[in-house]
Amino acid sequence: GDINGNILPEKTENGGSKREAEKVDLAEQSLLNKLIRRSLVRNRNQVEVLQRDPTSPLYSVKTFEELRLKPELLKGVYNMGFNRPSRIQENALPMMLAQPPQNLIAQSQSGTGKTAAFSLAMLSHVNPDNKWTQCLCIAPTYELALQIGQVIEQMGALCPDVKLAYGIRGNRLERGVKLQEQIVIGTPGTVLDWCTKYKLIDPKKITMFVLDEADVMIATQGHRDQSIRIHRQLTKDCQMLLFSATFEDSVWRFAEQVVPDPNIIRLKREEETLDTIKQFYVLCREKEDKFTALCNLYGSLTIAQAMIFCHTRKMAAWLTANLTNEGHQVALLSGEMTVEQRAAVIDRFRNGKEKVLVTTNVCSRGIDVEQVSLVVNFDLPVDMDGNADNETYLHRIGRTGRFGRRGFAVNMVDSKHSMDVINQIEMHFNRRITKLDTSNLEEME
Ligand code: ADP
Image (cartoon, rainbow, N blue to C red; front, top):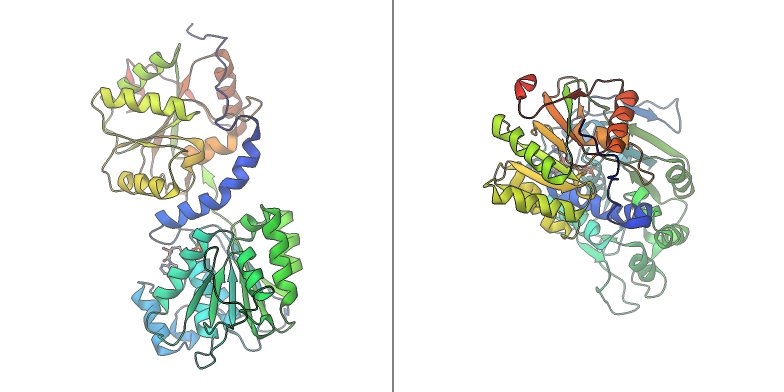
């Protein structure tokens, strides 16, 4: 029939260096996640705890009261709207606050409460009467450091004697005059300078060291080395805490270098499944044909919200312009936007200001698709060799949790090659992808 064998998927936006670009993007992605996060990520998996001393009792708390925090700090926590500790906090908080201090490596996906946990630990740890830096926290970028700082400032709003300084580029201070702020949060380069070159911080007086987003940190060689150099300045008694969203071997090796004798807490991310998703494909000739199919689709469907994925910025822009022409209210999420602009677009979409979001791969991570009832792969997800990118496919249309809402996925097939990709995806997930005739949509109801 309609299959045209000549059309290959367009090249990725970043040409050959996609992998490199993804690395660079990690920090941005993480920031975007933070900017759009309103609440804890749901996760029903069990927390795994590996204690350094397996014979010591394992403490976990179900309430913040059990932590015996200073009243003004407890109030600060409640003022943030936190009622009880998150899954990871239940175990991590008592460990971080234990006496004598214990080291910790904690891994859980973004949005599970790590930042709130170590912010609380730092605020609880410092002695406000001592006017020198006691807690040092490093993060991969300026923007991520600021995000953590905001949490500390909010949570510590009722602890006016606890002060915070930002060790980030552009923050120039007089050499040799020691900081009075009890908490310093910054990026590895500046913090290292502050400890060594400028001597604003006495590393021997640091009693709590926090390294956040270890996976993002080591994606940049320079940051990795600077982190280790900061770590070397610290004393053996300094409490070391390391956090990461993922845990590949490289992260693990780094963590073990920075955190001796650690307790380990892990919360595996909830698996995404296609179980509640009805999957279809539509045969098309070229992009105009795909566009017509798309218009038919949501002309006849009562959809809550839809996300449409394109392979390139150019295609996404073209599609957005055409949909707008047809009178649809469409938002575009594109790689050339700043993280803040992207966060604003996602916010509007979440609040239902637009029903349709057109996007490319790079931008889509972190968007919670539970509220989206239709996902359209205007271009199919493929890797650099043109093979099915199953992981991205699952991420675009899958849902977590067994009771995730139902949804539809429609794949536009415009070549023999993309039909092959559909077949690969079917095989991989062992789920049928049914042919759909967009001029007759009864199958979808
Ligand atoms: P992570 O550092 O793992 O990405 P965060 O600490 O930033 O996670 O928390 C994710 C979101 O959940 C934030 O909006 C934060 O304010 C909120 N949050 C954190 N801990 C709690 C809690 N115990 N109760 C309710 N919300 C929380």
